[in-house]
Length: 398
Image (cartoon, rainbow, N blue to C red; front, side, top):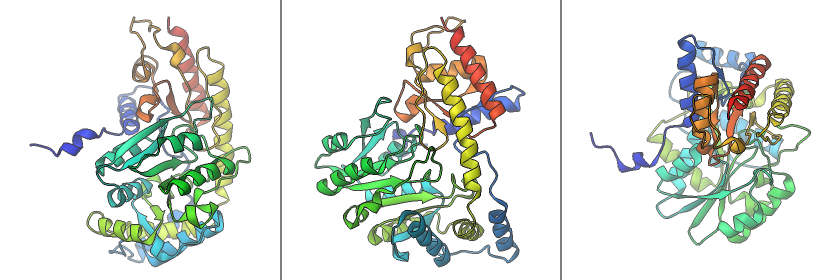
């Protein structure tokens, strides 16, 4: 069977591939420590689950409006006003099957052949492929660990051409955990407005920040940047609802209408009883997040301290999300005990998994071959065990 040419442009998600391989090894009885998880290890709060059960019991299982129920849209609108100081109407909101689906629909509605989309690296693995599937051209802007893995306003300005349609910002970031301060965002916003491009702001990790960091949405710097902002968020990370698949976009009404048309011909509405659960999540108590973030913080500090104590490894302290992104490049060109040469992040990840039973995601998947992404959305006991194994793996290299 001859497949469409566009399929050849994209790659399977390496994060899902690593997680799948680790699970397969575990199923065979192998004791694998998996650092590949892209989801919180906490359970969805009970009051949210009860709302879904109630919806099921009441027969709320039929088709609902394609862009989400009016009540869910209102809950999103209230959240954006309460948490971000942003005013939107129902015509500006569309709810989809997770933030990834939201971003995919944005790309299908907004990008076309010849459009350039600026993506700072390291980046979430799906951004470039989603752009490619829409016919756009990803333009990768390299950042450095020294600069906190953040793109500067000068870098953004230099990367804009007559073909630039959009820039993607993910703050806090997957995979680095870096987050833009308000002054940094203001400088980026000034460039975006002055050069008259659009920003896709992925804010899915906004609630998971540390050390008193104050999250700001780039859309909050006034009407000129707000009208150029496509704000993407969802419930997966903050509410530990990754499997519920609820994401949303707040944007220009014409873009939202186009996304609605696309969604109506693909997935239709968000899952009906998940719609009800999402309303409860957004409108209900959220004090549990503080406890979760405090636990993440303990793990974050432990991992960074341990990794930085390993010769040849350096790791930035993340400001948000639940990942560390250590640099292992000083170990490249060394050999494993079996004589295999480690030359890149993929070979290092294979060595860690096959010989030391640790699953990490190679940095090349995120546009940074020097690094590995390690999630700390797991128990402290497993983190300790996993870092012990990484340390032993590094010490065994010659």
